[in-house]
Length: 271
Image 1 (cartoon, rainbow, N blue to C red):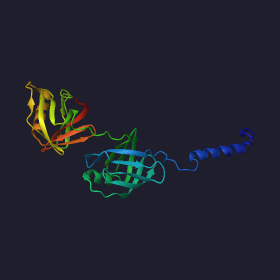
Image 2: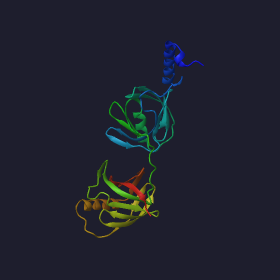
Image 3: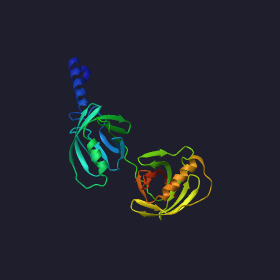
Image 4: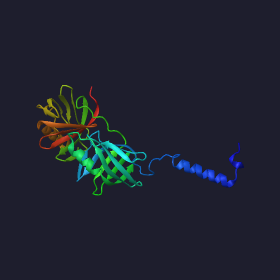
């Protein structure tokens, strides 16, 4: 059999060009869109719209196609959807909604906002393991390639208070108090832990997404400064029952009827 070195130079050049062309188009199949960077499955973390941040349910996601035809699929948080997608290089995509299911859903605020934002021309900011889509008015869809962590259980989890909430604003604990306010709720709803200075215990009662704490039994050390202020606010919060609780991944939020509350992060399971 004749080798390339025995072929005329012009024929060798022609064969080389043909091989390069075959590699560039995948041997006759369409590859991923060059440079757009959004292909794959993305798990929605949050939306920002009108100056407000909406945390995504764990089911909210979108899968952008690796190759043509350009039909994205996903879930708004409850209802599934399809959408046609066109790409403008690496900088933008245009989304045209297609079909969607029509189930009755609880979190309609997030569902409606996500469907509204994932429409029209969106600029693309691709970072390692992160994708942010931005609308013309500055609203954003923040997504991650990593699936959301499973929600920690309310009971038998060691919760460390990280911030105090007032309405829609949250303030981190001062450095002097950080990591000192911790509590655990047992399987029979007995709460115990530290308010940041004094230890406490209390019996709670649960009703769906609400917890009602009974009187707190505490030690009696004098607590001053930022630590004492955090302790006072936590004592008032537990007394303002019923508290509405919500867990997202490893974060617990307890909210009183007047809008005050706390956020806490999950540690290791209690013994």
